[in-house]
Image 1 (cartoon, rainbow, N blue to C red):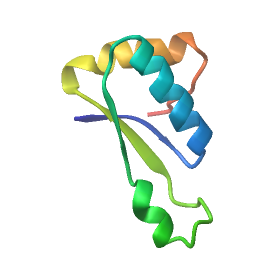
Image 2: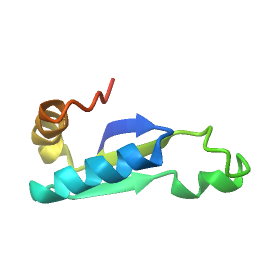
Image 3: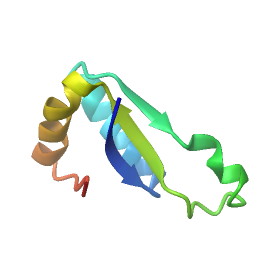
Image 4: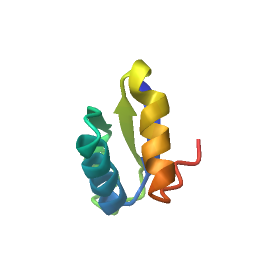
Length: 71
């Protein structure tokens, strides 16, 4: 799996997942339960992972929808 997106904004993760799902690209959100460690403040980033072979198309999908994945 490759990291596609890293952000502290949970709405960005949900939006990106919806876009990827619409393209048939499976995505997995990591570090969801880290909020226990940061006291639910949202200061620790969450990561959105995709399969290696889906990375290019996932990046194109996010770029086409003006999502800066900044990696």
